[in-house]
Length: 126
Image 1 (cartoon, rainbow, N blue to C red):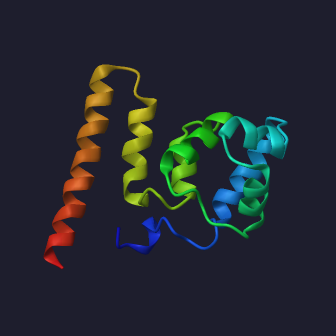
Image 2: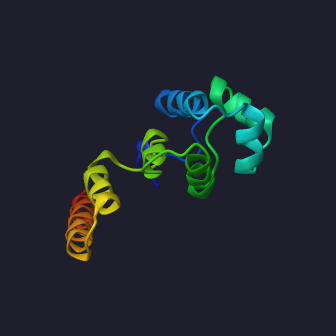
Image 3: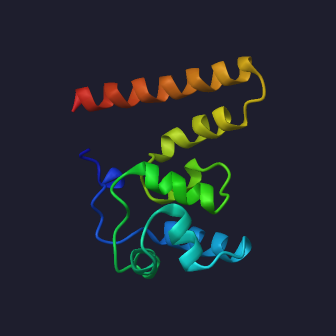
């Protein structure tokens, strides 16, 4: 992707991402080694990631796994902090996550599609 906010090769994990992970580790009382082990990454990498010495994992699945281990709800919040989800999509994603009926889910998906279509139109105009 060509937008900087979606860059997957950032030299340093965003501050919001690091702060959220550290906060959740404290709140759920999990050690760095435990989080690393349950996420499937090395403790050294996680330590460097949290100190800002390393960039984010290259795939979103690893970030979502980390969110799952840390019980971040909704897990997509960690993707947002990682700058992997444009801010424009956040309201629609949250609506979809919080939907309790199929009608609410349908409406949230409609909103999400509308935002995506709008973004595509903007790209083509450039």
